[in-house]
Length: 245
Image (cartoon, rainbow, N blue to C red):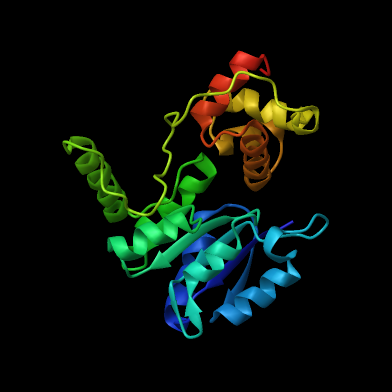
């Protein structure tokens, strides 16, 4: 089955460019749906399970979202899709803090600049199957600078209005109690968690288990939700403490 991708971009030339980037980024069969405005994107998402991606419906696995659109702002859609089972990546020309941080707060899993070279965008999107956030180099530097400046200040860093991204280090104490019975991991999820704990990438796990990378990604999201963690490191520590792996 082809991987379903939604590209929300009002500029036809940019939309065609992003289609090429997506097709070059993944080895799987790709089925791309294009939308030039929020209304069209919402209609397509409703056909693919609605804002929460209903069971039994084949949802989009990757959604690229432009910010400035004829009928609104892409952040509106990101905020609506916080529960939707897809990797959501902003693709825009804006690299300033006023666009970057609110987009991340609204649920973007990555942030790419359309002005980057074709090869750079392909490389950044490919990070998805390695379990890394797709971030344009300039955006990654901006985030590092922001956090470094906050750490070097004498007092607490100014409130930026967004939750900092987690790049692997635990951000809060790991609970030691076992999850409720209804939140127990399935056998498949336990297998994925075992591989995660051993440091395998999403692509490597997919190969070992004989499944698609996006299926592994779905399992990981479910694991994080059930264990109440937000990173690979937290999941690995909790799994070891609870004897889950």
